Length: 239
Image (cartoon, rainbow, N blue to C red; front, side, top):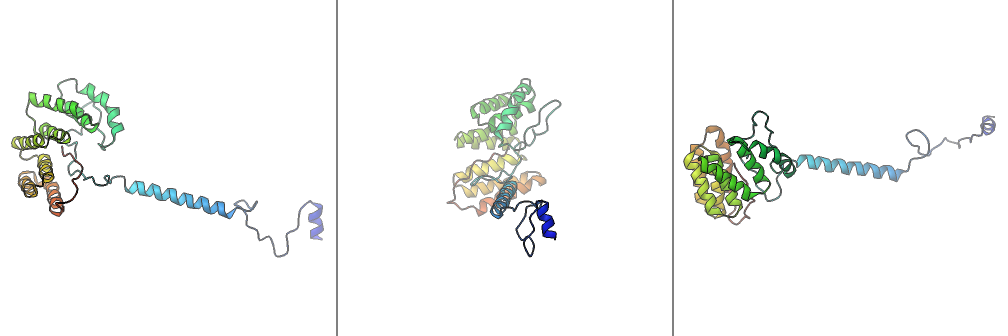
């Protein structure tokens, strides 16, 4: 009787034992199993890739050494109306976007603004302009921070002798400044003068403020564990 009523209504009676075919979320047509599995696998792959990128967001490129000192120390806090510098100094697009404003801020005699412009030019790889700016600043007044940064420019231009002189001059002016010790030690290490590099770091550990000794200790440990035959690391600037 029930089957006749279903036929009269234009419906098909279910087979004996009930309908065993798989259905979609709404109970309509059967969902294709392979498509569902494929979509699930794709979602897992995307999530895994996103997680890997998140975990590696602060990792340096292969072969590059992590800088032990904030390269923007002393210039990170902007003055009234000045633009803050990007924390990630490897973000070229950020530096390029900020450069016009930094150039405008540096038009006066504000030393901090001109230092900030120097950082922007340096991180954009405009070494000749950076060098000219730092040399102009030093011609007006000796500044160990600027002298140290000039050493970084000279080092990147391949003038290791000039860079070493700049770092030593910065330390002569301010023996408590941590960055020149690290940079000078790296220059000596590149020249296979490991014992001299360690001596410079030990000298720095005794001279820098107590709170800065941790970076000196890390550099000492790195040099002590480095193999003399290891590949020279990429330059890292401690400013």
